[in-house]
Image 1 (cartoon, rainbow, N blue to C red):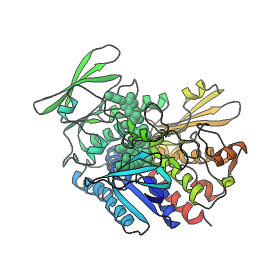
Image 2 (image 1 turned 90 degrees about the vertical axis):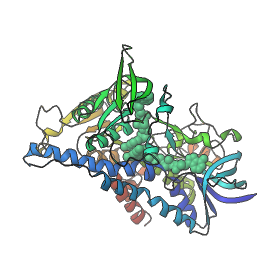
Image 3 (image 1 turned 60 degrees about the horizontal axis):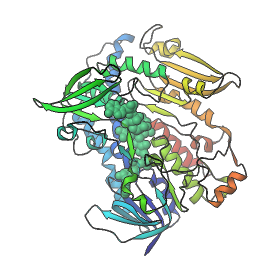
Image 4 (image 1 turned 135 degrees about the vertical axis):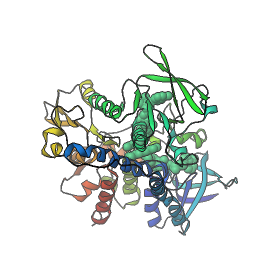
Length: 504
Ligand SMILES: Cc1cc2nc3c(=O)[nH]c(=O)nc-3n(C[C@H](O)[C@H](O)[C@H](O)COP(=O)(O)OP(=O)(O)OC[C@H]3O[C@@H](n4cnc5c(N)ncnc54)[C@H](O)[C@@H]3O)c2cc1C
Ligand SMILES: NC(=O)c1ccc[n+]([C@@H]2O[C@H](COP(=O)([O-])OP(=O)(O)OC[C@H]3O[C@@H](n4cnc5c(N)ncnc54)[C@H](O)[C@@H]3O)[C@@H](O)[C@H]2O)c1
């Protein structure tokens, strides 16, 4: 049976690990069933941010008269925006071509799955089956996909997901009307994009609030802002049936509190109702790799699975599903296994300082605990709120004290220790305003904290017993590089700093 040194399944954050293995001259295999580059490049962060940026400008231009700049209405040129969206998505072809050009990599286009504990096979996209093979080290980074909630009539009526939108269902023109189901980051970002194109958007959220991972005050504010954009929002509603009438999709909604039903109609329905892991494609039943009840692979703080020689990272381990978190984990694995470091200098993952940004209008950003979580955790909580209008630049941007659309920063502090527990921001550039706090919260000394204590290779057991600590000196470029950065371009600058100076 053929044996590789390294196999990576997935081509998103997995490529970070793959590149390190390649640079060491190891014999590698890469398996990807879809477009090379993974979700972020081909159907996630990057194409959506190209759209969101155009949508942001439309809204900002609309806001300009309030600071004394008269403007003509701005309009989204869908063809131009789409050309730019697909320019990025199509970089995928260059990624595939790059790996195909390397001698020590086999880039397989197909679905990889396990036939035994460390044995793999590939159902190739061309319909053939690969031979079985094995590897010393296997890295699973297969990500996740939209979780489709079954609704009567949905399959017959047809629907969109982020995958099909950036695929076979990409619209040549914006929809006249669109129903989006799900009020998380995907739902609110697409609601902003399409509303800015002139689409009549209806957002249906099962929960009583939008962006349920945010502090309650942020959820309440984003609701006001989203409604202010002309988007119709139904909270605490579920869809019970879909039918097609006069060329439109008609959705029956039920108020979960009162049971009252309403009908909403639109050209198209998009599901943004959460994600599920792609582990069902892997035939994990042929291995002893542990997952939780929903299929997310259990990993420890070193991204090890319970099977020696198999690691998993990114969305598939069920920790926060963000591009910056996936890359952070991939960099940890790279540092430990291919960085030439002794175990006592290994890195490990911590999930208490994972920043999150939703690129809605306005942006929403947070790191750490919400007020509600801090109270529940038993901290001596004190909070403070500072409005954009109370700052000189906030006023310059057009916010006035008392304005119901004023953005704010909410600080959650442990009063006894005087430490920051969480920061929550809603308003322009929230993604950038958050970053200094993320870096500070991540800096300093941290002690190893076991995650899934039963998962431990011999080295990890020793490291845990030695009570390893890592000191991130706030002056060091290494600390900058080891801190997650959710702003897309800021994170690229940080990666550049890390690669340029980090190794010196
Ligand atoms: C619409 C949208 C917008 C987003 N915006 C942001 C954002 O602004 N910021 C942010 O931080 N995050 C964002 N995310 C989340 C981010 O894209 C993911 O967290 C990140 O891409 C996960 O990376 P990954 O490496 O874990 O998996 P992926 O990048 O999903 O890579 C996994 C790859 O594995 C492939 N695969 C799956 N099963 C198999 C198999 N059996 N064999 C072979 N290949 C397989 C898949 O085709 C996929 O390409 C967004 C997601 C979506 C959907
Ligand atoms: N800017 C970003 O970082 C960014 C952007 C997009 C996506 N993402 C990541 O991708 C993941 C998936 O995003 P998401 O927004 O789909 O998931 P989500 O789980 O965060 O939100 C989905 C929401 O849909 C609701 N919902 C579920 N079923 C529903 C139904 N049938 N009808 C109406 N509402 C329903 C849920 O109550 C939930 O609030 C997120 O966890 C997020 O981290 C990140």
